[in-house]
Length: 575
Image (tube, rainbow, N blue to C red; front, top):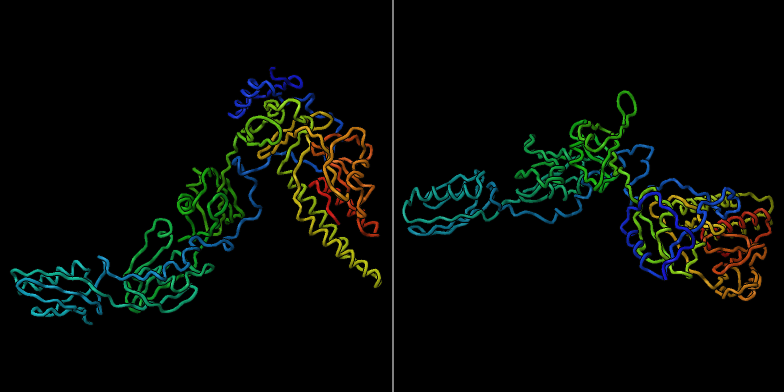
């Protein structure tokens, strides 16, 4: 049997740009027991007063990371002082336990070091010669030799020359800088724990800074660090060079040297589509956009940059393409926000329930529900195509906010009310406990974000949004009875039975039930009052709880919120 359709297939407004739809098309043509979802008059009638959509729906495009689109940036500029400095994770104890031995090829000998000298051939001896206060070592048979400031290769050359000048033939010489004199270095300025720390002459600046607890993140500079010796600067260290390129100045320390961390210079705030939002310190009062891009670690896809701050003529804000930003000047106090601001032409939606084919579809950004449904094959005589519904994140957020607003009004109205008598105060205290417990449980519930798109066998042909989940339910033969009934259960649908019949089959009402407020939850997500409702297979009977209070106004408010929660979550909260 060829594939059948419910009615004439809807025409697509444009070809769907999804490989998955090609697969669906092949399934339709090759599956004899499948039908395509297509319903008549997919646009709902103008009279929508009877449509059961309690929550107002925002059908505007939703910004979502999956499509590479982003919402508006914050209205207030970010203060650089509230962000961690670039390089904040540098000093976590990783350097303080790694003291160097000072025996690298570039080490310069100083007083107190020890040099091993081995000579064999016409003259044989082996001695460990200390470098004295004048920088000399004493070589037997040759006399004193000054080696201060020489590296290991230069020491060996000097020793060989001194020995061969006395013993010119058949003499071999070997030298080794065996040990170095430890040094004590002062670390001060804007560090966490200023003090005097032991090390070796060839230890890194990072070793001594880490010993001092690192740079003060609020006040210290990562770019202006001086090494002082005898009241003059012998080296300046910029840690940004180390963080970005791995290069760092390597002065050889002497006993009594001082490392001074200067006060933090002007800074800018960098955020948006970067791997980490940081405060970046400037060496002067400004830097170029190209220099900042070299410092910041951007996420892939960044296309635009928002630059804002204050200038002499007032607040300043401009939005640049990334390639134009390179030539811009950034000044102290500015905020820079990087953004992947290229709108994708494709959205991704998900399908669940009774159908054939893949579960995710890549669609054009302007695709509508009918275009997708018209291309999805479903099992014939097994799918409730008239009860399709849709979950949408923006709807869920609206429901969540609406619930939160209602709960907050409930707390504000009844928890702050004053009592004129002791008896009234006791009643107020009981009501306050009831409200508090109810609010705590209600806030734990998550709305479904269900959007009712099917009504009276018609489907609203809405525009799809990125992240939508479309539910195509299977035809059901059961009824679910839940809420305030003695034995919540599922029962087989029997034509002719009414709501009370099903409730009686579930043991009847509990003594907390509100017998005047019973809801029917349809398969399409619509929620209706049980009065004068024709039951259908797949419906859920939801018996609401009664508000346990004699305060008529409070009872009315609680009942209203219970209805709101039931519509948003399909749960009857037990008071």
